[in-house]
Structure formats: C-alpha cells, structure tokens
Image (cartoon, rainbow, N blue to C red; front, side, top):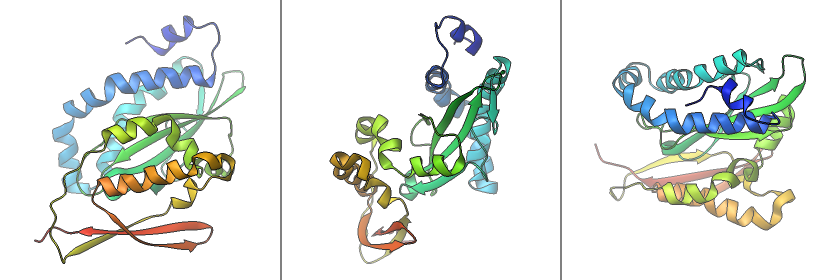
Length: 239
C-alpha cells in the first residue's frame, strides 16, 4: 500500500482523522497476513511466556506505523500505539475476546496537538487467538484522565463497530453440566451512558450478548468504587 507521506500528499487537509483513516487501512491490509506469517513464532512465545505473545504481535504490527508517523513529521506521545503501563486500559469483554485500549497523543512537528489515537486490541486469554482486527478511534481529549473518562463511555468504544461486532461473534461451546468456570466484566457501567441515554439499552445488550455468544451466563452484578462488576459463569470442560 501507499506510504503515509504519499497518502497525506494527496489530501487537501491533514487532521487526526486523516491519520486514523490511513492506520485503519494499514491494519486492514496487514493484520491477518502478518498474523499468518508469524503464527508459528507467536504460538511458541505464547506457550513459553503466555500473553506476552500479544505484545510481540502488537509491536510487529504497529512499529512500522510509528516509523511512518515519525518520518512524516508527527510526534506521538508515547510512541504509537501507546504504553502498556501508562496509556492503556483493559476492562472489557469475556476472556475469549478481551479488549485493551492503547492511546497516543499526536502533535505536528511545529508542536500543534492534533488529538489522540486510540487503538483497540482484541485478544483471547484462554489460548493464542486474535478474534478480530484492531479498531481505531479518535479523541479530542489529550490528558490521560480525560481520555480514560471518554473510554469509560461504551458508546465511544463500541458504536463504530456495533454492527460488525454482532456479525462476527461465533463461538461453539461444548455443554457439560455441573462443572463451572467463572469470570468478571468490570465495564458494565460504561454502557449506562447518561449522555447517550437513548442507546444505553443497545450498548448493554451488545455487551451482554458478547458474553452470551461465548457461552457465559450473567450471575450477578455488584457496584464497586463507581463501577459495576458483572460476574459470569458457564459450564467448564471436564479434564
């Protein structure tokens, strides 16, 4: 595909949305082919070091984007897509389709702040599997506290991909009674969005449906420090 510099040279105006558009296209074209090419190595890393394999894949996919952004004169803080410790959150989704959001604030070479790029990485905690390509969001907010507040609105994270999400979920569960496994979701309150009350029901339905499609049943919900923690169970495979 075209380089970022070539892509931008064809645009009349360059904004954070222009950059996001290029990154979406890059990920769409590169993600699955890279995953197939590196599958054996990533499986080996997962067997030896667990979920560090996802970090390795993330760097494989995103480092060329960071290099192109730098070459085109943009400054990302931290480097795209973000830093695991200081600019990422993972509150959402069942173990088979966890969502971690990374963010990086983008400035021009002249120091003008364009906004924040948020990259949604979806991954499986039960085995090495990337259930779908990363998503890209754009935020005007540039301070960590404000970014976290925005990402805590399910409407911000979910609406762009809501229809695609509903179409993509396929998971076969072998039902075996009497033996159960349990998991939690810390982001249920994010669906109850007072700023978008008219879609809160849809967002909550979508979140619970994601768990349901993976075989999980909601047991109870407990409020804790401003969040709603959902407890789920499903029949476990007998060993």
